[in-house]
Structures are given as structure tokens and as C-alpha cells.
Length: 130
Length: 152
Image (cartoon, rainbow over all chains, first blue to last red; front, side, top):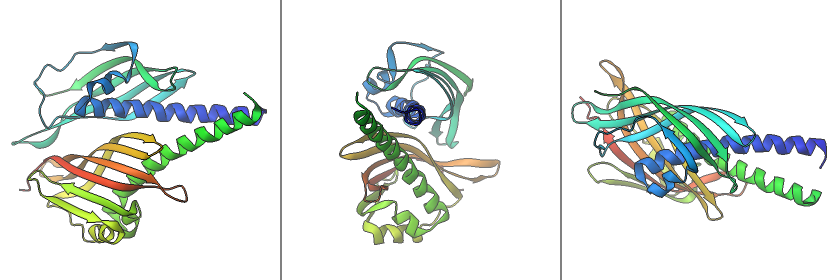
């Protein structure tokens, strides 16, 4: 393969990594809210570390998570990703509202099947209701 | 891998990346076209025989089928009181040989006494088909409202 094709292949690999990381971020959010649980687990490597306090409040039927603005730094077969995250909820008094917001600090790894999965996730909650 | 095989592999990878980006293009184009026009742009995000179903919390369903009904839906679309603009995000896109399946979080923003407020949160469940020319279009859309703020 000539040098131009090698460069094109490297550029394509970067675009693929950017797409696949975002695919996993969005898949994890969808699976967290709608299941199946196995899909959420499949967004992580088998030895993944998940740090950060879990929300012990009972789940509201209106609770929906979101993630946005991922800053993705690809380094070969790994990536470091920071994203804004949060949740919407609803009640009779406030209607739909942002009930929590924070940040994900993730490490991703490219797996043998080509998928990019989260190998380490740190959930930093910046604000939530008392 | 031979040079020819490597080139074919690259072409296949580009096609996959292109398909995924086309799906996102259509998803976002549909939001812009509904909020800012034109109705033709909105209808053009759907296949000629596409089916749209909008379900609201009281269970009532609004259905549109095919290009002309979808164009009319967009042309006659009226904002609920207090609502200003839609948003859509977190699109989970699965693509295979049969097409694309997408679930997206969506909502609507509006003005309240204290500033911008969330008027609605919901979900779109879409299927998209690859069309001649490279565009991907909605073959079906189920639009569900999960929660909304009653107008005051």
C-alpha cells in the first residue's frame, strides 16, 4: 500500500474511533433507561472499573439520562473521553426538568471485535436535588 | 492481505462510516425542518411510504403515511402553547444489512416566567432505509412523549 493510502487508512481509523466511542456512549444511556441490562454491561470491557457514587433514590418513571459534548482524545487503541451528563425527571409541581447533572470521565479501549468499550468510568455528579 | 484486498476493505469501512453519518444527518435535518421549515425538507427525510406515529400521554395517536401526508403534517404543525424549539440527542444507532434502527431522546424548550424551561421530554424510535443516491430516510417513526409541562 502506498503512503497516501496508509494515511487515508489512518484518517479513516480515527473517524471510526470517534463514531464508535459516541455509539457506545449513547448505547449505554439508552440501555440504562430502557434496557436490556446486558446491553449496558456490553458497553464496558470485562474488567472495567466504574467509580462514583450510585444514586440510591427510587427510580422515577420519568427519569431519562443524557450525555453530550464528548471530548474524545484517541490514542491508538485507547481513548480518553470527558462528557457532560445528566438526567431529566418530571413531577406535578415542576413538570419536566433537569434533575441532575455532572460529568463522565471515561477511558475507552478498542476491543478485538472492533467495538470501543468503556474500560474505566468515573461519574462526577456536580448537582442534584437534596 | 493483498493491495487489492486492502483497498476493498477500506472501501467497505468508508461505506459503514458514511452510512452512520448519513443517519445522523437525517435525524438532525428532521428537527431543523420541523422547527424552521421547509415542509418539503421534512417530508424528504422520510421514504415515500413511511409511517409516522405520534403518541401523547393520554394515549391518542396522530398518524401520517407517505410523502404528501408528512409534508402536510409539517406545513400545518403548530407549536403547543409555550413551546419554542425541539432538541434531540443521545441517538443510539444500530445499522445492519436490513437498515438502521435508532432510539433518540428528544424534548422541547419554551419560555417560562423564570426563563427557559423544559416543556416536554420524549423518545423517538426510528427505522431508516438506505435510498438510491446514498441518503438514508425514515421508513417509520414512533414519537412518544414521556412527560410534559401543562401550559399555564
